[in-house]
Length: 282
Image (tube, rainbow, N blue to C red):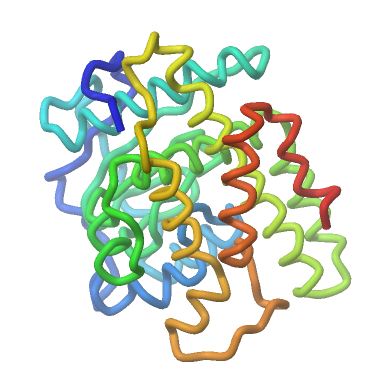
């Protein structure tokens, strides 16, 4: 994937090195597989608040360094996030970019205390995307995801998809529908539709990345296949098998491997958010 000549917007808050005070015992090694099974690439705000309160509370207020990070990993997040913003400015009237918080181990958020073991997540309360960059290694070494740059960019673009859903009201509508649901299985179906739409939105970004950056940010040969490999690696059915359990579709919260790959592909092939109506597909 080509990205190093891309524009940097500087909409990053870098909290790395602040210590991650308030992390519950056990650390990422003890929690990562169980947590990723529920939270990888997106987390329901209500669940965030429940889980993070159990993991140590809201934590003390933190203020990181604002701007464009100088290291390569931070610069990658900045360039990709800026490019995703530029795409959505052309697709959604009134689009307002989120802030991306890069942290280590744990950090306070508007949704409670966030931990690296929860994977990347978006908090609608403060409209921030939270990334602990160690997740890349966990995703690749423990889940079999691709190490390609585009696979990592897909993670970021998916979280931006949740921001778009907050701006359009889709996330709020899902919350209301879940509250009216007759049971957990029905509530989970709404969650799956929301997550698959975020996957589709990531594909929409990928399809338009080059056009908004004059080719500075662009997919290269084999990139979309690496993204599809990652989408398949983090499907609910694959994660349930990896954790040693049976596949229980009623317990899916993000969609099967086939569904996640299909909706990422659909967004990429169409480049149109209107093609991402996952709710009518269920």
